Length: 307
Image (cartoon, rainbow, N blue to C red):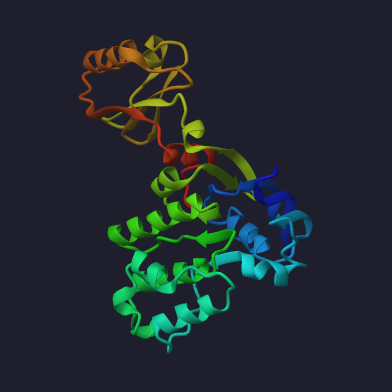
C-alpha cells in the first residue's frame, strides 16, 4: 500500500501467559484519520504503544513510515507526533515556554503562536502548566504532539474532558492535519467523534480486529425503528409478520429495535410494527426511524456487558 504510514501485521504482545494483542493487523494511510476503537482491555493501547516504540512486540511486525519503531526510534522521533492521556507536562513551566521549546527541537515546526490561537491557548501562554484547567492541559498536550509538523500522529483520547467548544477546536485541527497529508491515528471512546472524523475505523476486541471499514460501510443498510414499551414483550408474531431481512429484538429491557439487515425498512415494515403495537395494546413511546449508528455497531460487535 504505497500511501500507508502505518502497517501492522500479525502483532502479538503477551503479558505473562496472556496475549493482550493476538495476531492483530491494520493499515493507516496518509491523509486519513484512522480511528482504533475497542472496549477497555481490548488491546488497543498496547498496540499503539508498540507503534510508538514504547513496547516491543512478541511476534509480528510494526512499520511506521516504513521503519521499525523499536529499532529506529531515533529516525522516527522527528517525524512522529504522540499525544498521551497523561502528557507528562512540566508543571512549573509556562505553557508558551513549553510549546516554543518543543517547536525549536524540530526543523520545520508549525508556528507556535498560530497553533496556540487555533486551540484557544493564546490567553494562557504565560500561565504555568500547573495552573491550567484540565481542558487547557489536554489542548496543550495536543499542540505539543503536532507542533513538529509530524507525518503521522497518534492521538489517545484527544477530547477527553473537553467542553463542546474545546472538542470543536480539536476536531478542526485534526481535519487540518488530514488535509495537510498527515496520517492521524486516533483512539477514542466517543463513537460520535469517530463517526464524524474517521475515514477508516478499526474495531478491536480481545486483541484482534473484529471489523473495519469507513463509518458509512460499517453502518450501511442498517435502518432502525426504535421504541420503548413494557419489558419482555413476546415478539414472536411481530417477527413472523415482518418482511424477510427485517428483524426485531429487545437489546435492553423495555427498548425495542426493528432493524433492516442490508435492506431498507420501508413503509410496509413501519406499518406492520405500528399495527402490531395497536393489536397488543402497546403504546410505542419515542417511536423513531433512523440510521443505525457506529455506537450500535460497536456494541453489537463487542457486547453490552461492563468490563
